[in-house]
Length: 103
Image (cartoon, rainbow, N blue to C red; front, top):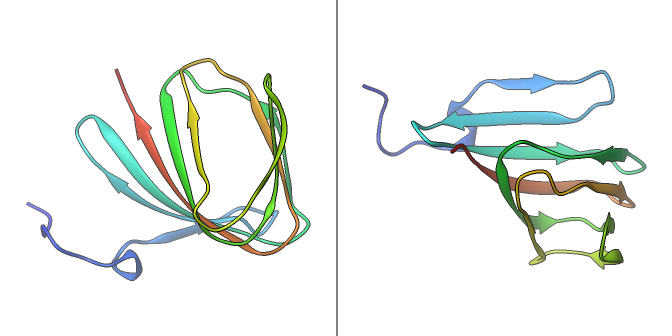
């Protein structure tokens, strides 16, 4: 059984060619993901089959959804129901925590 209390640094980091780094905590029905996004990165329009909640810990950018474009920064929260498309542009290095809920 994995430990009940750990830190993000206890989890292995994966890094995409774009420089986006992720650390993932897997649960039975959800994953918690710490994402480090380099400044100048764009996330193209996409959606997920699962519900996703995102908390912005640091950084800034613009979120685009069917509801329009919105600037975000530390303390911003995103909620995407399954299938809701979204895209983002990251103006500064940004740290996010995603909660991905599987049905």
